[in-house]
Image (cartoon, each protein chain N blue to C red):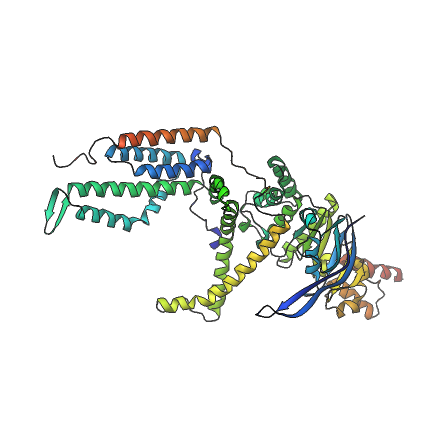
Length: 288
Length: 275
């Protein structure tokens, strides 16, 4: 069953001069149609300005389509009466962890969403506890967000979204401002939610390493979907990725270079283990 | 470090006063301050000092924290005392050169000094024992009646608590921008007042731009989490009166009535004086 579906979605930003006259129009999202199945882990890739963040904001009904339609769990996001229902079902985690934490204590921040939805007090506490446990931040519930690391803050943000019991969580470059350790923490939390809680994840990123475990990858360029497929299918098209100004993981790049140099290797190697296995096996065969 | 800055002057401790409902503390402080203006003799002030001492004792906040609050008004206090002492007309007690201290002046000076100190210590006790968050919550609840007059009480309280959350973040940012500008040769320390004020411009402009950007991001994040004002919102930590809060209200009322009654008896302000 599809949980998020877009059909010919178009979004334009108007550039205005100082008097407010329209100078020009930038089409950020250009006739995008995609279909996300419930319970899957989707990655949307693209360099800066490719329209991936704009697409994300449509799923949460922060933006409303200029043309085309977006359905979240069967609800049309353009309809005013669906607005809050859509935002509850499709949660969103943003890039800057500092700018999305509202509470002065971790647990209060996680409770903010359910408070807005009018959930009874007792149930708010249950939801806060279960969400904080799901991201492994329960021990920090009494901390001030200012005392946490970037990765921890981002996990609190995830818990805040999770407490609203969404069906989809859209991650809009959640790791762009984090160090490598924090990045791993956040991606691990996102994968955990997908596998354990069955929440559909839409991860928007420009880090290739993060999409290795996705079920399906969409690559965006100039507002259009340029490539789509499994991570392996995407990574096997090295030349195309280079055209789109995207970096592939080092292991994949190494495998590609080896392949170019004449070493017999399969296409689209994603992890170090795969490369090692692929390199070792023919040698064993060729032993005298 | 900047990160460890505490907002307001909350003193962390486990005490009965800390656990009281913020509404009791806000209302109580207000009543107490008003009461101070009714006293006409030393018994009233004596009772107030006794009452305050008892509350301080219960709050487990060390007395030196109260004195800290006094330091800021020391200058004001001295001026008040000196002016009252020398410039009040009445029966002179001591005269030297052109200055004379009168009986009425002494009484007025002493009562003003007591009133000011008790006022400052009393209200700083409230901020010392209540977290800023609790204060905002309490005020929101107490001002609830203003909603009838279309005052956006919930919104104001939300703004206050967001401001509190962002103060340390913006402080850190100020520090960062300052260092960045200093690395490029900005001078924040030398020159006269005007030169220094001018030097603040390259600090304030980026700070404002970033604050607006943050506000924009935060508004979006709040909307994404279904924030739509105070209507239909439930509370994770609703304020609820307990037995101790009613007891506190009762004791407070008793103190107010008793001390005003005793404080207005026809007794002199000072025991010593000219007969």
